Image (tube, rainbow, N blue to C red; front, side, top):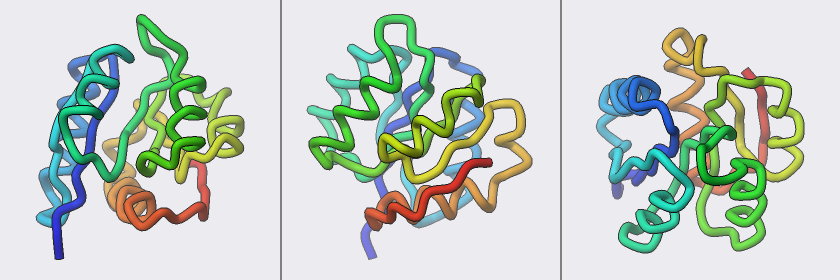
Length: 130
């Protein structure tokens, strides 16, 4: 079985580190790249063969919901939202995110988070909010 390649997009380096730690606990998942902005994320998408994106909705140079919509329209890869503002999670699910998690509770949701990464890699639209 090939590794699930993940791109973590978040303007917070601490959040990217937490995501990296959670992903590192699963031998089937590889953090292939990370990005702190929308521009950097688009560059990383072109440079790597990504299966799943973890997406912060609040980026300094772009709207995470717009990015999510573009990604799901192009069916580029699966998307799991990890955001500090859960008010946008319902809309993110409607736009095609596989699951949504709050940054502050992500560390306590490791099992569900890793499961959501796997479902997103399989193209599952069984969407959930946490």
